[in-house]
Image 1: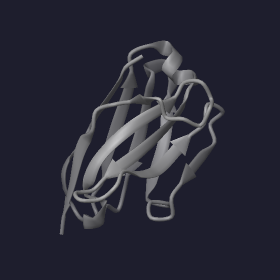
Image 2: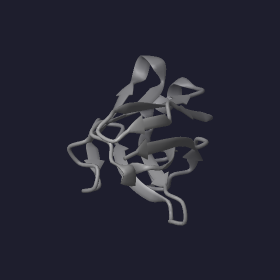
Image 3: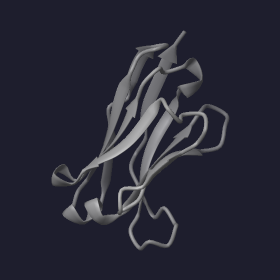
Image 4: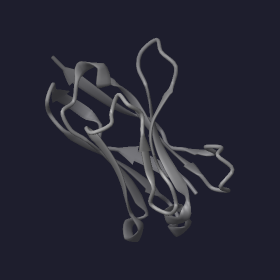
Length: 117
């Protein structure tokens, strides 16, 4: 299975973007999925996860602003990002846990999100 992330871009503060992570095989819809981000000079940071059962979890910095969701028919996981802030600027990555071990063993390529003030 390969993951393809897309949807990044340049947006003004307060704006919105939706990132997509498409899986190359239907089995992606059965995996737990997550979004991470990495800002320049910083470590990669976990920001949201969606379990195979539909449970979600967000880090405090994005809670209430970001929403992770899945369209199983399209083998795609989304990250809806609202009320964007300059500090949300980063390369965003999607990931999947194929085996339910808590290890993110599948990664998509990053997509750049830049929020201007």
